[in-house]
Amino acid sequence: MAIIYDAVLEPSKQDLLKTWLPEQPWFQELGTDAAELEHLGAFRFDDPAGEVGMETHLLSAAGRVVHVPLTYRGAPLPGAEEFLAGTMEHSVLGDRWIYDACADPVYATALATVMVQGGAGAEQFLDVDGKLEPLTGAIPVRGSGGTGGSVPEITTAVPTTSGIVTTIDASPLTLTVYRAPDPSEQPGTKLTCTLPGQHPLILASAR
Image (cartoon, rainbow, N blue to C red; front, top):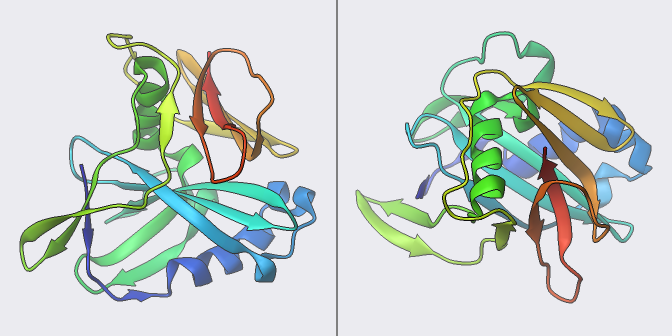
């Protein structure tokens, strides 16, 4: 499960995205104005160790869907300085370091697991004075693999981006994240989502 706190964030997630995204070459390729971004929704993956928050935002501008996975950490991720999206003050958890999730091995493991094992996004709960209340409204996502699929240990995530596609070397797997997802068929096992009124979009694939 993913536990979410009723907290004040400074800056807000949306302000952070509007500052960080225009600096990203893949976002510049889209020719989209960050000021016009509309938040369509989000989904989360679960870190079994409970240390790293993983949230993927889906945004829209000029008719295009923009796929932005982030990780939230309580300390800097060594070696990932160039993938730091910013820092945030969380009124419950304190200082948070926000990363492009494609450079985070915890995200790479979670993404691969969902795709290979045919999993879904994490159930979300709001922590209200220590009581967990279920949250609804997360964008539904599903991996195309099957139950029992084996996921090798992933300890590094090295992303490289060409155009609007990011490839993650998560040896021995190669994960591909589509920054502007569309319904086109892709090789390997996949992660898909369905937004209201649209065909299923392929967010990522694994080989």
